[in-house]
Image 1 (cartoon, rainbow, N blue to C red):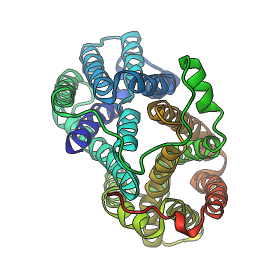
Image 2 (spheres, rainbow, N blue to C red):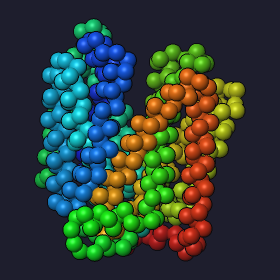
Image 3 (spheres, rainbow, N blue to C red):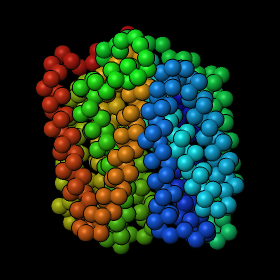
Image 4 (cartoon, rainbow, N blue to C red):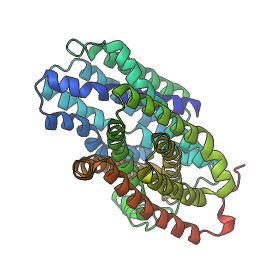
Length: 397
């Protein structure tokens, strides 16, 4: 497990390392604001298609080999990005990055197979926590290596460093990560009948319990990006400087890590996955409403901190609950589908939040998020009512 988490963290570093560069690279090559926006969205757009394919491939060739391929491919894409010298080549390398953006869904499928009972949600939370560490480290590495002059900075050195990290992660996975063995309590739903791969895919899409969960995951992606866009505008409204906003992001990232590494395990052990999902999503709505109505900066930031605790909690639990409904042998495919829907939600969230911001300000975005998370709360309590009190996960042996 430590090798898997290290690989996830390392693979997240290149993704976050590049993002701060994109507006400056676009300006260097004369890109319009819309063309710069395309640089941001190309990777997740391609990832919507790529994630299910990587997940399906991992069901066929194994998690270890599939992870090695995604990490090795990521290294190649960042070597190409390091030497991109036009808008067209930047677009091409962003597409390549999207193609190989499948490591997280494979890692989640690995955990779904290898971890049972209460350990499943805890381990999935650790996967997201490892990704969060990488996303926090990446911009710092990029900032140090690219230089502080917007006119003369270079993406070459930071991207080559990112590629090197990806190669080291691929080597570690290939030589030191064992293929997961089915753990007690880690089984999915019904086993698809033997036959063609298309028949197995039909078995996945015909599982009715999957679709409400997938829709909830899409909402979690929507909230993730809408909140990232709206939060700086709240900071601007209270005269925060860019440094203040950046510091706020760092503090909120600490809350994310507290949840993924500290809260998920005890919560699911005490209440079970379904009840934890209902509790966390309810807290999310309360915190959103509290943020909207407060006039105090300190209280508003406190509500945002609470959001950063509750959001990854119910988002991670969703992935864990989803894994229990996946047909046996199709964990990678289902996790890839979930990752694609979350990416779709993130893209839509960014676009809709931009429109709402222009019309109603940051409060309008947070109000929209509260309405959407209320739908998650309703569905979460429906799931709780379907699970008897004895449905709390038993400790795995």
